[in-house]
Amino acid sequence: MALEFVSRAEWGAKAPRQVTKRDPSTLSGVALHWFGKPSAASSHDGCAALLRSVQAAHMAPGGLGTVSGASDIAYNHAVCPHGVAYTLRGFGVQTGANGTSRANREYAAVVYMGGEKDGTPVTDEARPVIAEVIRLWQKKGAGPLVKPHGFFTGSTCPGPDLRKWLELTPHPWVLDQHRTLQVAVEDETPDWLMDFVHWRLAEDADPKRRPKQVPKRVPESAWETAAQVDRIANLMGPQDTFLDWAEWRRQSAKKSERPRSAPATIPQSWWEALKRLEKIFKGVKTATKPATARPKPPVAVDTRPVTPQSTLLAKPRATRKTIERYLLSRRHGGYSDDEVKKILGTYMETCRAAGLDPLLVVSQMVLETGNLMSHWSQPPRRNPAGIGVTGQPGAGKSFTNWDKAVRAHVGRLLAYALPAGEGTEAQRKLIEEALKVRPLPADRRGRSPTLEGLAGSWATDEKYADKICGIANEIRQRA
Image 1 (tube, helix red, strand yellow):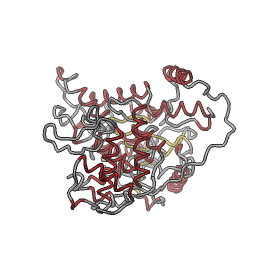
Image 2 (image 1 turned 120 degrees about the vertical axis):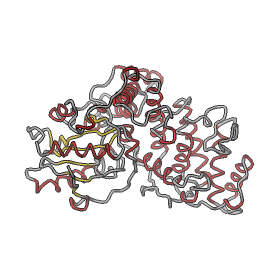
Image 3 (image 1 turned 180 degrees about the vertical axis):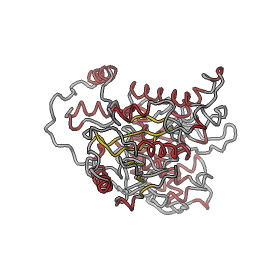
Image 4 (image 1 turned 45 degrees about the vertical axis):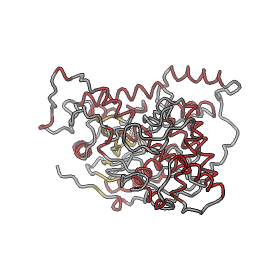
């Protein structure tokens, strides 16, 4: 069926505060939601107004569990009971609806505009449209998995009727000519399976790192394995979902403030881990009643989206806590959580003294090292930004400790931002120290006052600045 979407302008959407791009080809699939609350519009004339009210709720202070409100309505697309599809965030944009940061990176979000109070099954007009929206995501490169929102959070979303629909075989969104993917028996558990799972989960499905031995068309059983492994890892902790829950338990444990990312049923391992933390940090007990102290006001940061035109020399665009939560929510190689916190602390202090925005510097480090997963970032090399790494065997700089590594990175980036001879005495000394590690051609001094200048200079990748922006804006969603 040829499907036409009601555009954002047509349903009266507000402009998003920021947009995090996400290539559909990096997704595992689609997550299916319902509104739960509110209920469906009584007639189709009210569907646009319903979307506007949901967007307003998501973007208001406290929306989607954020302090200042979400950047936009959470979902990518919506389908109303009358069989009409709507563009919300749309294709190629990361969702904010799936409950965890990884689920948001791994799945698009499609919502049925009905709720638990309606008491009626999903309409016959809506079902084929939902199926077609899922097919369109898959045509744009998303993987074959379609999961209920509750798969990630333990909730009942998207309700019993849609859950039964998702379990139908063959799947309603699979066209007849694609009903089966023939896989030889001996290939059901192939040698490349764990390479594929590792790439999906540990390397964030980076197209450049896709294992060569993984076939172009991956069987659904392999996608399912990756999804189940991801789910198990999230239940084990310490992942971001666990940290959100533990923080909530220790601060107030108020039902109204329960983190959206926490599963409906808390695993026993989480309770045991929390008890152990209380023993480690003696005197800090889990809250048994609402705290009476007022929370401290959030640290003021620049809330405008990071773009290639964002300046390197700027006040922090994210707090240390926000950046820390992002770094710890992802795998970070052989470094412990405490070591990652210490590395970040060194970055925050060094960037403050240099006048650089630590969000941009750390985002570059995340890009260059895969969040401290790369070979060059591990001891004894500790190279945070590909300094001297040319691809030739053994080419690259190593550092005896992270203090020296961070100073070399920050000083070198400062040299890109400031022309020779400019800056404060402290900035000039830091640049001099960094360029002793690896000299910088004169034509690159002061070439990059903004992120845009790093593309084609720090790295040959013309999309280098865009990639740093994507990471920086994703980090800020952890606020």
